[in-house]
View (cartoon, rainbow, N blue to C red):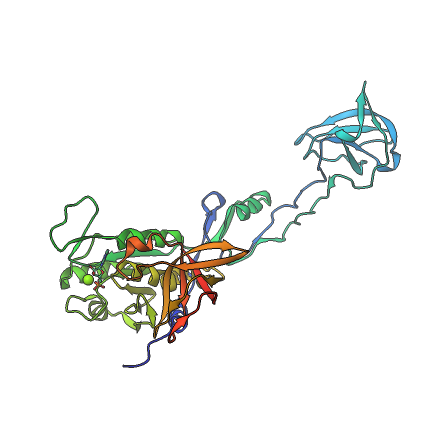
Length: 395
Ligand code: AMP
Ligand code: MG
C-alpha cells in the first residue's frame, strides 16, 4: 500500500484545484458574510466636513478666554447660514458642521451659558473637538480590501464611506447527498437496522456556515441507479458533497459511480483519524468530496478539507483551518495517523487547556456533541504527555 497523504498534502491538493468563483455586484444590505472580490474605495471623505466632536460652542480659539454672544445654533445636518465672525460663538451639536471662521469647539461642560452669551473661562486649543475633513478616510482610499469577509464593522465602514454596492465572489452552490439504505429522517419510525440521518443536518449546517448555499437531497439508497441519479445532480453544482459509501464494502458505490460519470479522483484516503477514507475529485469546475459515513469522520473531513475549499471558492484570503495553540490537559495515545480528538477547552492562567473527551470512536456523535474543539494529536508512538503544546480547531 502506498504511503497515505498527510492532512497538509491533501489540503494543498484540494486548494490547487480551487479557483475563486466569478465576481458579482452585491448591494451593501445583502453583502453580510460575503467576500470581497475587489477592494472597495471610499466615495466621500470621512468625515466629509469639519464636524464637532462634542455638544458645545464653536469659536476662534485665539479669543478664549472670553465672553461671546451666541449668534446661531447648529444642529447635526443643519449647518450655519453664515461664517463665524470675530468675537462670536455658535452653539453646536455633536456631528454639526463647524462653521467657517471657527477653529475649535469648547464643550458645554467647560463653559457657562447665560442670556445670549457664553462665558469661556479658560484657554482653548486650536482644533479642539473638531473632527477634520477626511481624518478617518479620504475619497478614493481603500475601505476594505479584496479577500475579506464582510462583517458588521466592514459593512458599517462601507456604508459610512458612501459605497452602495460591492463586488463579491459568487456564493458556491453545493449539492449534499447522504448515502445509505439504512438512513431515515427524524420523525420517521425506524425498522430494525435503520438509523437516523445525522450527517445531512451536520453537513448542511457546516456548508451554510461557510457562506455557501446548499441543496440537500433526500438520503440516497445504496443502489446503482439511485447513486447515479444523485451524483449526476451534484455534478451540475459548484461542489458535490456526499457522505458514506466511500469505503471498500460492496455497498460503497460512490467512487465507482463518480468515475463512470467522468470525475477524476485526485485522492482517496488521508492519514487522519477519524476520516481516513475521504475522497476528493474534480469534473470540469465541479469539486467532488466523498466524506465517510461515520458522523464524526464526516464532520472532521468537512472541517479539514471541504470548508477550506468552500472558503477558497469565495476568494477568502486565508481559507485554511485556523488551528490555535493550547496545552494538553491529560495524556493521550499517539497512533500511526494524525488524530483529531474531540475535546473541551478551558482558559487556565491565560492559556487554553485542551481536555480530550472519552468516547472518541467515529460513530459517537452524541459524545462529540460535548466537544467544543478538535485537538490535533500528531502521529507517533507512545503517549503525548499532559502539558504538551498542541493545536486545536474550534468547533
Ligand atoms: P459508510 O461510510 O457508508 O460505510 O458508513 C459508515 C457508518 O456510518 C455506517 O455505520 C453508517 O450507517 C453510518 N452512516 C452513514 N451515513 C450516515 C448518516 N448520514 N448519518 C448517520 N450515520 C451514518
Ligand atoms: Mg454506507
